[in-house]
Image (cartoon, rainbow, N blue to C red):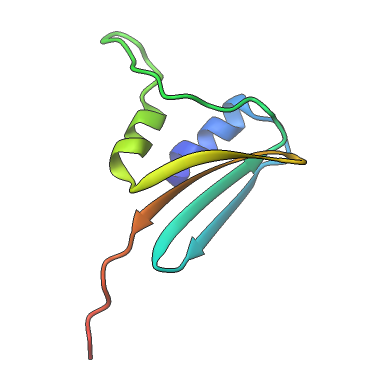
Length: 87
C-alpha cells in the first residue's frame, strides 16, 4: 500500500511529498503532497498498463480516502493488524 500511494504522489502530485505510518488498532498509511487534485478509482481495461493501483488499495484495505489540507492533500488507507499472541 505504501508503494502504491507513494508512487502515485511522485507521479501525479507535487513536492513536498510526505509519508506517515500510524500504528494504533490498525495500521494507517498517509501520503501527502502539495497538489489539490484528488485521485479517483478507475477500472482499467484489459490492455491498460496503469489505473489499477487505487482499486487494489480499496480492495486490500479496510478503508481509504482523501482529505484536503491547507498545503495540498493527504491520501490514506487503513489495514487491520493481526492480534498479538499472548505470552
